[in-house]
Length: 421
Image (cartoon, helix red, strand yellow):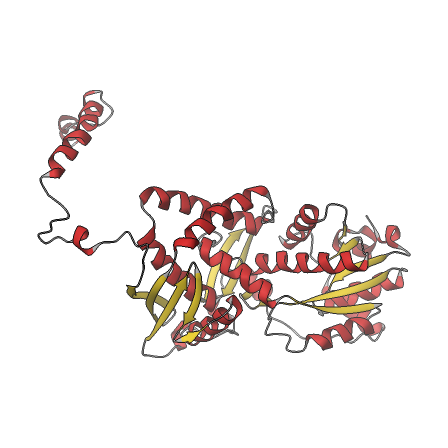
């Protein structure tokens, strides 16, 4: 699909209010496209007045511009990731991918009410977001067409990059923010910040190059640790740091505040594998997700036996990759979330942790009714719950297979090991 196919039609454009949004909105309008802009309110701290973004988009040629209230929805998505422990490649809490799904769902609901059947976005052809926008739309509303200017030959011929867009906006007196020399790019929402591109593309640039926005660097955190109590009820944090939290949004805001001041989840460096096949370097901030996520991880240690743990860890890694790659809405993800939900139903209890210089350490656990940990059974002291004599028969049974493997030559014996020396 190119811009000529859209002339005379109405297109819903996902607008962040930045340079790309201003350029694309005006360029589409100048080609006879009726543009309706949707800006998602995701609790992003870098845009304190989203109403001003809507005004800016109308000034750039949008026929309509709306702000979609999606903070509660993105908070729930974040809580789901905490419950699933869904960190991509071991560290990234998927804060941007989760926000993309929430944005698409919110926009599609608004489009259905307005009768709009084309969704447009400003994601480039080399990143992950184009996949997330496309696949989420295809799965949730397969009749809706997706138009991406950065894959339109006519748009690419006009705009080679940032310089041409700035020129275009200045020539048409569009209300873009004063062009600056940003040293990296940032994407923000309630769950966290992702920093990439610019100076961060050089691996000689340390993660500390990024100026934290959700807290402080671990090296600049207080010299004294802070004890934080997190109370979970069926997987939901209902109290954080002594403050009742009646919603996922409230829990994340409190956790962001506490975690941020101690450098928790600030400045994570990750060279990750993008779905498009290239490696990308990012620096991440997610203090609330990390604080709640670590507390929940400590709770899971008490709940899962070794077989359930193995299944949960597999599901966790699977779901993290699904979300990252754009398949967060498919059947596989739905099935995986079913496992996560069953575990969350058991996850009630109080976990106390210490936040200190970017770390979250375990202090204590109490009131965990579904806990499998029993002090009497685990004690190394004399205990009626465990008879040491019972281990004799247990080990004899295990030893049968071990001896058979050795006699079959599958395991090197002492004689062979001595010969190797």
